[in-house]
Amino acid sequence: MRPDLVYLVAGASLLLAIVLPELLSRWAISAPMVLVGVGMLIGLTPLPDGMPLDPQENRAAIEHVTELVVIVALMGVGLALDRPLEVRSRASWRRWTATWRLLLIGMPLTIGAVALLGWWAGLAPAAAIVLGAALAPTDPVLASDVQVAGPQTGEHEVDETDELRFTLTSEAGLNDGLAFPFVYVAVLVATEGAVSHWGLKWVGFYLVFKVLAGIVAGIVVGRVLASLAFRSRSRSLRVAERGESLLALAALVASYGVGEVIGGYGFLAVFACAMTFRSAERSHDYHVAMHEVAERLERLLTLFVLLVLGIGLTRGLFDALDWRGAALGLALIFLVRPAAGILALRIGTRKPADATGLTSQQRWAAAFFGVRGVGSIYYLAYAAGEAPELGADWLWSTLSFTIIASVLVHGALATPVMARLDPDRGAS
Image (tube, rainbow, N blue to C red; front, side, top):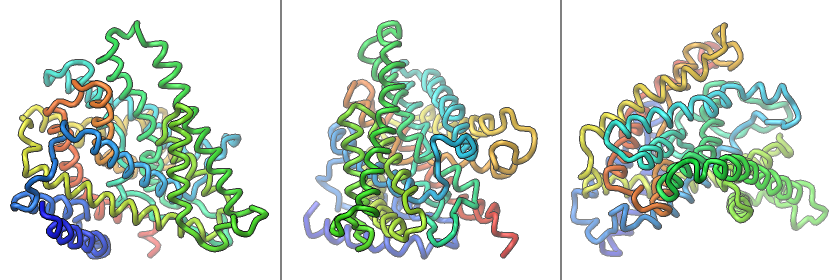
């Protein structure tokens, strides 16, 4: 593609990214839907000639771009949550019950069901498992229409009033990191064979150590940065007083780096850092400024990924897709995720809002809105880097189809469903 045309397309696309969210706020059309459509139209023109689109040939670039998009989204999600999680408070943990249920029950069930469907479709065990692990997490990037709007501040105790949005937001913030152990199951099956060769190592290192290391790294970095930003003795280090919101970028990069260096999951480190920082000086407007930086950067990066994905759809990305891949993707959206989610949220509950804080209708919505997106692309690209056989064209086509189907289905239903279930609707 010629450089001048790149600027033209990029400029027009940036304009769309700026105006679409407000323009489409009252319609059952999401910005991701429009951006994918724009990418498909661009793909039908001669403009993208020479653009590298093959996912196997450009795996490393895809991995690093999507990795950046996800960690930016995780920082924004962590800063947006108003409900604290106090490690020593049992009551605080109980207020996150719906989130824990979706993570500890719903996600493993989804991974297992998708892996079985993949095995039924003829995939080798490792490929079936990686497909389940990649498609299981709720994406924090494309799920903005069903998540909390942002941090509330002021001289009052703030908390989440919308249990449904809080559940979906907190789940998206945590499950991108917690899906990683299952990705490693696929990698270990592909590279080391039988479970007896690596089972104990997986439990001890990949499941326990890396999760805890990532969380601890995020908490430490978050506390250090919060102490500097709000309470440092040096005025030059108290950046909150100056409203220097670019600290959000420093925080996400530092926490991710520390988490990865010590061997933990960087995604969990970023989310834990954001949550820890948000818990400091909760009424301070600085949280709003930091969240806006993360949100805008996420929007721009997501724009790029969606455009390239749309272009790829009309440039051969679906060439390996068959009825089995399409059936698997639709089954995940309409059957597997809703069934796993509702089972996770209903186990052990007797009353409509018992234990989880969600009404019956909200449970169904939380179970259904498991948006698939950029995180799934990252996981498949990462796994393919560890074991090339996990990057087959059929896997990429099936994954891409599922993401596009999720963008269309969830994007069309998010606005009317969330408006209907808005807890403030009756009071307005």
